[in-house]
Length: 314
Image (cartoon, rainbow, N blue to C red):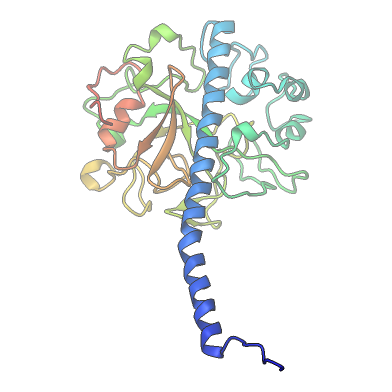
């Protein structure tokens, strides 16, 4: 006897499809969380490598590199505009790339632009969007750059120079106590970090530049003359604080600029991680600092010799 094979009814098929859709909907957020956790860990590891490079530079030269040189100094005998990353390339196993860099020229001149177009994974956070840097507005003495081919390679990490006294607390901060470890033309030794190396930030995330972000929204219509690429000598910045939507910077806490990070990325701490930024401290450890940290506490972490009292749970 012949038996007819059973088949799914239309209702049964729709139920199966609905169950699969629900399972996918439950699974995708978990996969995204795992991917972001891995990206954040890689970002942290990049900063640890940069910390080792900075310490090796200190061991060789007796001082940490300046955030950017405009005069002659350790590793920059010609006194050109040179940033800290080209000086520390050998310490992240990029000796060949440093050989392409001509320290007799400013970073934007001659073959240095070709060197600056070479992507270095250690300088890029995997959570940050990719971007192509083919032009840059002028920043004296650097002229405007346009039609760059190949495009310049970006970076998502930058030295924090310190705090802006007028933006944070002009009564307490001044020209004598406002700085961190690396700032323009600095020559800071380990012994100069009197606030403690474990509570002094040297380098942190400032992701996405030179594209400008407000919140999580890119605003390409706003020009940015700093943080152009990893070779840029003028990418470092001081902490100002912003308001909630990032539209105001440095307006003082009394006027609403109470946020320390992740509101704007043009010269303020910023990451594409949820809830904070990775920070490299002067002792070489990397810590994820939550964006709920108060502006005053974060400012204290950005100075090396101001004598602030820092809460243990920052």
